[in-house]
Image (tube, rainbow, N blue to C red):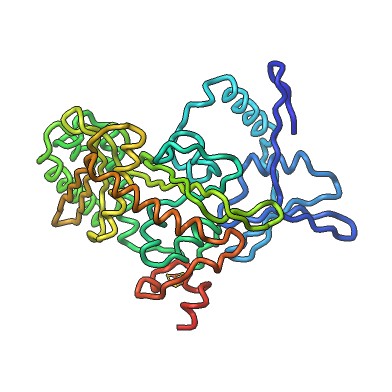
Length: 383
Ligand code: SF4
């Protein structure tokens, strides 16, 4: 669809993955990996673009369901709003970045400047780009295939992780962020009062646990003077440009460049003593060796964007009855070695054949039991 605004012509389209010709109609099929419904703008554009002889369908490959894509009631308003947003964007500073969850859906995070290349190399449009989240980075240490299937190939998980501990962790993070955002001195009695208030509708046991964990957080944080946490859920990351395998539109493989962007969402970022950049990660589960890797990622991410010589990363482990802080201080001498490590991992990632999801090697181990691909990974099923 096209629209002219202020002398500029903008276009919006929605892609479908299959076009199936039937006797009396054509089916346009959108394929989705996640179970979330087709977004409103896609559904609106498809509805307004379709002819009488066409039908819009969506297939969810995780469970094989096929559904009609129904037009939203206010589809024309949705489209108009989208055109306004595009016009606002092009009328403003297009170089300004807005890091967040959206970064995980962006196909060129290595090029926007928010996640700079470690040696300031420039990535080109023809370079292959791969985004590796901190979770996939941790998985890489256990089983390459597990990390690759998520980061490179978009294989849908066959098992969903849910547990009481996971639910508690998510809620604790959300409520703590709210307290820190809305209370002037969150690590004081004011913070505890706020935590009690916003969790009062939770079940009694969960409410007690949330408040108890927040008290422990205050005790741990109080050992640091002048702590200022200015942002929550902040994306930190960086890019490494290495040699690797690239494919073209004919799916031919050739040697080229691969831009691997490592990215992790830090719970909080701020400053210590008004000066040193600080990253804080809250953990409601057990302390694990891999958390050092996460801290390394945050430290390099903070350094590449802030260009500071010293970065502090705190992991704060909280249970109902106990708490522990692990502090890691990164200085200039540490970064060269860490950069080498992340480049070596990027070379491994860049060697995955982009057209062959079975090319990354697998490692079977105790972690398979908790792997989201355990029912689709044949090696595990054959064990
Ligand atoms: S089931 Fe095991 S071997 Fe297979 S991808 Fe998962 S972790 Fe790797």
